[in-house]
Structure formats: structure tokens, C-alpha cells
Image (cartoon, rainbow, N blue to C red; front, side, top):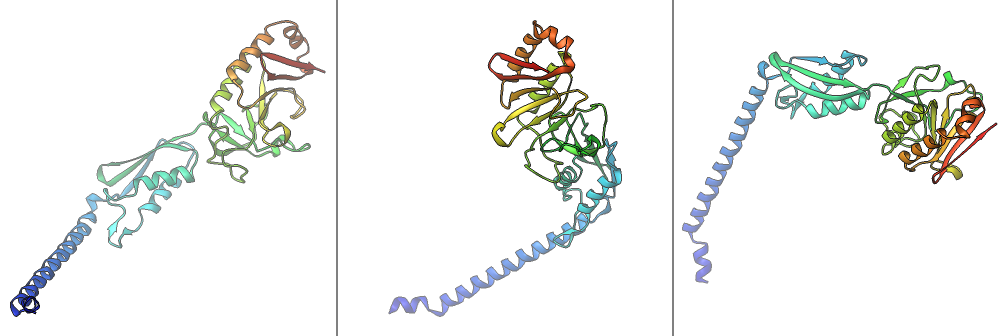
Length: 296
């Protein structure tokens, strides 16, 4: 009974009220301080010398400068929390702009954003170079003209980045097969044979060094021959009837190149290939250390 009276005594109640008042005052000062800091940041963030006023683009040759600027300007418009401008040097969305540029303009690479004097944002870019073309998941249907097949440029890593115009006379090696996106209406931004492409193009170079000119390559992903690869050689006959080199996806391409070279350098294949090249049907490399071939 006495303990309860002590806890509810007027003196203790007054002490509790004072503590509450002090806490409220501290909280009010803290909130006021936050407001002052926020207002100060808003004021400082809007100082013209601390904001991006212009955008410069360097390094682009094919992608239009205005198209690159448009992406950046779209991300620099507006405010954070309704008050802090996105153009502020310390707040502008650098990573977001670079990401969107890479997604919307897949030809671009090595995208860097740097602040320069006088409020200038410099966007430095590189552009991918088309070394090969990707022309679909499968070979064109019989009767379809080559110029009716839509192809896309690929860089040295097998990255598909832009639609390609029609080229005659096998100017670019053509690749067929499913990309890492799977079947898609728009393959840009996808990769072809991502873990195998570099080795594959090196293998193609080895074939060319043997005076055998490839024109296209197909990776079969369906049916009984899943994973089989056919390299079609330059000919007046269109694939799939054109002469071809056959092997399996995942084979040791260095070993295959050595086997092919040994066969091409030795008779009777050496002489037959020289004399009947236009009658070649296929060269089959699917069997260990053996090369099978057939002429018409």
C-alpha cells in the first residue's frame, strides 16, 4: 500500500511530466533541425553551378547524338521527393542513364558519364562493330530468297545488337540457331552460343586457312540431331543442300581442326578436294580421330 502511494506521489508525477516536456522539446528541435537541413539541401541542390545544364556526346558514329541525349534528358527531368532536382551533380542518376542507353541502343558499349566544367555532362560511348550476322533460329524455308531473310549484326562475342541490311556474296558469315533468349521476335540484346562462340569463330578461321570457305553455320536444337552443328560451305547451291562440315556441339574444336587439317593435307582426300571441290557433299567430323567425306 505504501509502495503504491510513493509511486503515485505528486513529486514523482511532476518529475514524469518534466521528462515528457523535455522529450517533446528535444523531439521538436530534432524535427526542426531536419526541416532546416532539408530546406538547406533543397536550396543548395538548386544552385545553377551545381546542376547539369548541357549534355555532350562523344564516340558515337552510327547512333544519333539526339537519340542518346533524349534518354539522358528523360532521366534528368523532375525531382526527388518533389524538391531535389535530378540534375544535381551529386544526385543525378548516372547508373540508370548508362543502363537505359545500353538497353535502348544495343549497338552502344563502354558507356561512361563524366561531369565537366560549366555544368556539362559528357556521355562517352563506343559502338559495336558487326563482324558476323545472325539470321534466325533455323534455315530459311525452301523457296525463300536470301534477300528476304532478316539478319542481325553480331560482334566478336556473339552479341546481337542491330538489324543488318542484305549483303550478297557471303560478305558476312551467317549463323543460325537459338540464342540465349530462346525463340524471340526481337533478338537484339541476346547472345548466340555465349560459352562457345569465340572458339567457334576461331575454328571457322582455321577452316578458311585450309582454303575451305564457309558461308553459314547452323546449330540444330530440335529432333534427333539436337546439338549437331553444320557449317555450310560457299557454293552456288543454297543450304541445306550445299556442301557442309558436320560435327557435334561441345566437341573439342582444336582437335577437330587438327583432324581436318591432317585429312586435307593427305591423299586421297587432298587430290579429290582439289579436283572435285564443286562435287563435295559433306565432311563428317563426328567420329573420334576420323574424317569421313563424300563426293557426288
